[in-house]
Length: 267
Image (cartoon, rainbow, N blue to C red):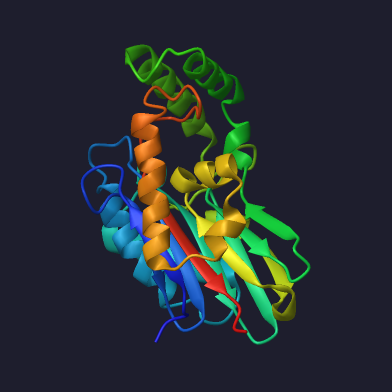
C-alpha cells in the first residue's frame, strides 16, 4: 500500500510520454525523462521505466542521495549506458515520516510545500537555468515577439542543447539523473518537521509553468486526482487555443508532458 496522494499525468503527444510517477509506503517519486542525442542509446521512456522502480524499491529509509546513487548504478548496468550519451531524467522525491518530511529535486522539476501558517517553501534545482543563459533569453525573447515554434526556434533550441551538453553533470554546470552516479551527490534535499507541513505539490516543468502563471499551487493542493487531470487538460488546451505560438508563455515546445502529485497531511 503506497503513500496516499492525488495525482495525474498527461503526455504532450503519444501516450505514455516520458514522465513517470509512483509511490511506495512512504514516498512519491516523479521523473521527467529526456532523450539522448546518441542514436545508440535507449529511448527516454525505457530509461524512466527502469529508474522509477529502482528508486521506489530504495527510498523508504536512509539517505536519499545514497539511494539515488544506488538506483543510478543499477539502471546504468542494466541498460548498458554510457555517461554523456545516455537518456536523462529529472528526479523529484517526497518522503513522509513521523517526525520529518523530506523533499528532494534533481533537475528542473519543482515542489511547493504548504505550511500551517499559510506560508510556502519552494524546492527546486535551478542550476540548468544558468547554463546557456544567453540562448535561453534569445529564444524566449523571440517567442515573446511572436516568432513562433518554426525552424528559427528549432535552430535556437539546437544551439541551446549544444551549449548545455558540455556542462551536464559537471561542477560548473548542472546535474541530472543519467549514467553518472556522482549526480546523486548533488540532489537538492530540504527537510521539514512533519508538524510544519500541511501539503506538498510536486510538478514537472510542463505544468509547473502554468501553476506559476496562474498562481495556482494552493488551489492544486486541494484537488483530487480527477480534478488534477482536468487541471492538466485545461493547461494543454490553453496552450493550443490561447497561446499556440508561445508568445504569452515562452517555452521550448508547443506542449510538454505534464505530471502533478499532491500529498496532504492527515487531519
